Image (cartoon, rainbow, N blue to C red; front, top):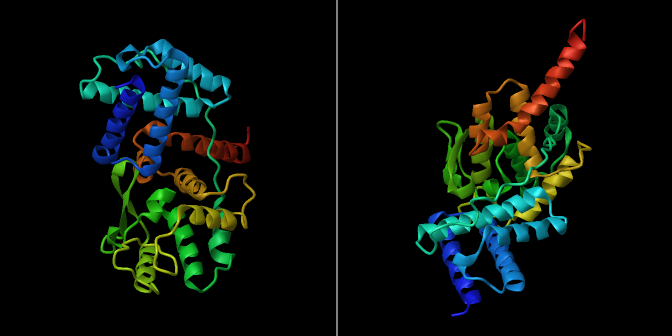
Amino acid sequence: MSTTQIYQSNLQSFIDYISFEKRYSAHTITSYQNDLAQFFAFLSSQFEAPALDKITAAMVRSWLAELKSDKLNAKSINRKASSLKSFFKYQMKVGVLKATPMTTISALKVSKRLPEFVQENHLDTLFSHVAFTDDWDGKTKRLVLQLFYATGMRLSELISLKTSFLDASLSQIKVLGKGNKERIIPIAKILMDKLLAYDNSKPIRIPEVDCLFTNNKGKPLQARLVYQFVKDNLGLVTTIKKKSPHVLRHSFATHLMNNGADLNAVKELLGHSSLAATQVYTHNTIDKLKDVYKNAHPKA
């Protein structure tokens, strides 16, 4: 068996592991697969496809340096390095390798960008004054936008919501996040009532489709279509550059923080595994405090 075939065999074993044991999302699996295939192609072209146990940290750095010279940003390079770390860690776990070449590989410094968000009054305008059609499509769009802002859930989480995830008695929703991690998000009773009424009034109900949100043919919503109508509707009320479901997630978190929510609580609501990922929202809170100080303090 050639080294290239061995690469492919080890790669497939790893992909099976993250697919069936770790239960990663299809998007994440594709990213891992592409990153590793790209790395192995680099090894074949630059180092004549060394055996797995002959891959060194210097070879990895050469690949990362090439990515940087190709103008790939630090965040993307770090993600690819993370893919390699997970792959080599798995090879050690199953006994293929005794050591990983990733031990001395450090992450590149990533410049922090404050997340864009929609102002509260602009979202009030969206839900109070923007007209949605009375047909199923219009009802779906309005309710999807409301749920994005009310819960901060991701696009993939929303379109995969099942009716069985609604707990009307406690007015809360179960969400399956990254890595199939489960979290519970409370919502207002009035919104829960709208979700239940929406589900009960579906024009077409396909038995094998358990998704809460469906189109007028009873099929699950497509991510790209949801992204587009969220973008279109936000464009009616805000001029910020980025308009997407994730901006509504940022808006949810920022507005909670600006109104005094505990950082750890926001972390749990967003489904972040690390508090560091949530702390970016404190910058917007500090900016608001500075404005309050400037406008209210006599010596400011």
